[in-house]
Length: 157
Image 1 (cartoon, rainbow, N blue to C red):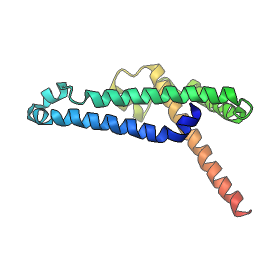
Image 2 (cartoon, helix red, strand yellow):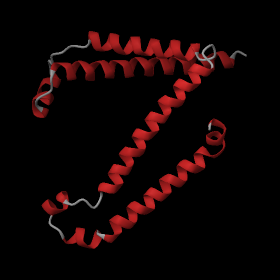
Image 3 (spheres, rainbow, N blue to C red):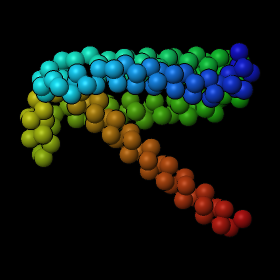
Image 4 (tube, one colour):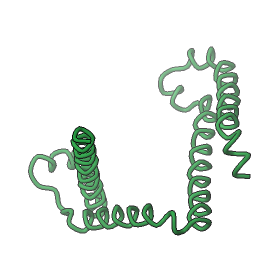
């Protein structure tokens, strides 16, 4: 299965994506004239675009499931070779959960007005958002530093 997907996986994925796109366009084009004649409120109630949305969601879920499945298979088949990746994943998870634990659950200052406009943001959601932003910043700084240091190292080689 792996060899087949390694050889034909991209063509298969492109073919399935193209087929779904053609089906979606055929469905949407068939009802586009009727859709154009509807009022704005009625356009929001139509289901002309549901196939495209559901197909996109289904393909995204399928790709995530296959990503996790093949990742687990790869780690199980070559655990020693996957050790560095697992350590990096654990370090990333540690940074993420530490960021969430340290994030404030109350909004103060300039963000308070924005949260009031949005309304109904729970303290847990605020911790999740703050922790995610902090993790993104930390990872970005590490990536930029790694890039700069590798270029400096390459300069002196």
